[in-house]
Length: 248
Image (cartoon, rainbow, N blue to C red):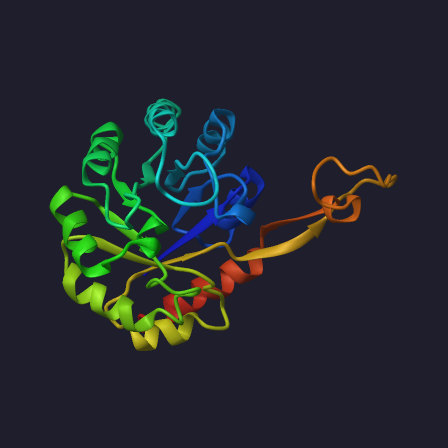
């Protein structure tokens, strides 16, 4: 039973490791679904963390159909992530019609080699999930992260079950999307073949500044800018215990 925690800060990654995570997916800006972290963040995470660090490479929020310039950036960021010690790459590409971009995904897998390649939740926007999974298997993708094309993995259980049957031992299916201690038991019970769980396990934290102004630095109000999310160690610990107990 593998517990993968998605972290958009090194602080969160340290918390996740300390509370039982098996590996980290490192990114930036989870409020937008995650984008590529900086080289410095990757390097520092690898210096401080002993569990595997997978790096999400995604140039922006939104869809997964990329311009030529964006695609070139993805390839360069994969090269840099490898240079700074990433243990795996998380990326992917779709065509405008929602089908898998086979050519570009193959290029990304080649760029990531010899690291394991995870096709990310672009899968949850693809037109034909069963066909796409079969294509990913033929391409040699190591892992697939998906909510079962639903807003949460719990809502996507039916498709996840189908994907697990197709996958067998050819590709690792990672369930992600709203997984928390309160519902991970339901996934374990409903999907006995599912072995990998992905969660951001976040809680709201507040700025330690003693003096605050009402000057906003972006589109959010100044009050909202004084709070953000980090990994909640208790949630990670609770999920770790539930997964370990399920082996008994």
